[in-house]
Image 1 (cartoon, helix red, strand yellow):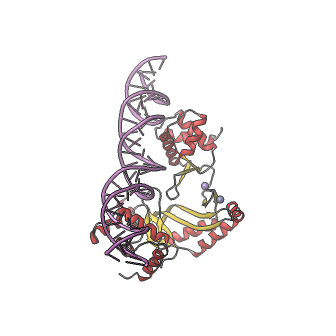
Image 2 (tube, protein in one colour; image 1 turned 45 degrees about the horizontal axis):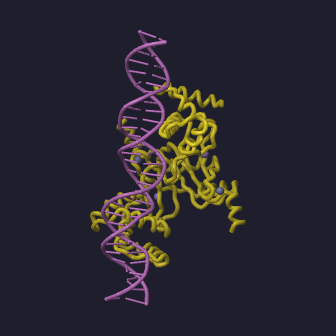
Image 3 (tube, chains in turn red, blue, cyan, orange; image 1 turned 30 degrees about the vertical axis):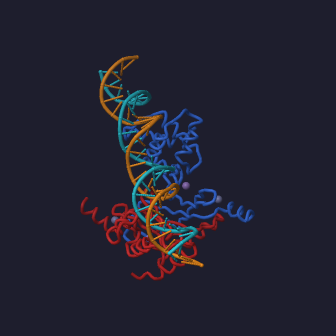
Length: 150
Length: 150
DNA sequence: CAATTACTGATAATGATTATCAATACCATT
DNA sequence: AATGGTATTGATAATCATTATCAGTAATTG
Ligand SMILES: [Mn+2]
Ligand SMILES: [Mn+2]
Ligand SMILES: [Zn+2]
Ligand SMILES: [Zn+2]
């Protein structure tokens, strides 16, 4: 429950865009906001099946697209894997350390890196709109496990 | 012609892995090394069609995979676009500024950013294997064009 | 309530990449 | 040079996430 600020933004957006307020979208957004970050469409669909009745997976794709459009969600695409989504309201921009063993996403940020990126693009007369820093490797838990198991 | 160093590495690799030396791979590698960076499989296939006879597109996929395995190529995947490949022999690691208007890839690097990334992962006990920094926006040429055209 | 039109869910389509497989080419050995 | 084992090729089918289609349904507005 709650998430009233997010819903206010969403409601404003659908009014502006002449979209309609449907039960399915309500359920999807509620579930999305209550779930772990970096969730896939399939995972969300599975969770919804338990609570609400069936909601078509196409509708979940569509609703997450709307959430991204109104700035309430971000899409994260890694290689050939299926897209993941994270809430973006109330979270600032951050980078990701991604464990290649267990799939964990660690959120991290260094203001100095952000600043140096701005310097970097300036050198090329480039106007940045967005950026993505992903570091792939092994999280500390998986590192320890690997030590034990060999 | 030439590219003898790359070919030496490739030849060493195929001997070790019990792969065979085929005309198709020769042509593909030659064309790959002579082409612009950040090329797609489809583009490479198109170019090869002119010079050599037909080479099956599956063979190009397979050969580029081998090139990546032996460290002579890198795969670059952006969102849902088709994969692009770049030579990696004789080029050091670099980041990409990617123009969303014309598709240009600007290669850039800041040693200070690289260093701060190492600090960042250390804070989380994370062992990095690779990383990817991509900045999306507008290159200077496209920026000027936009100014003129409105 | 009625008219308009956006939405839904089932399903087909798409498109890049990978798997399959029979025919062929490579290569070490004789 | 011929042979045999096996990696490779190219055509094509399969895969799989995502998007498009469309008939039926539901939200909105007056
Ligand atoms: Mn995140
Ligand atoms: Mn590059
Ligand atoms: Zn892990
Ligand atoms: Zn440009």
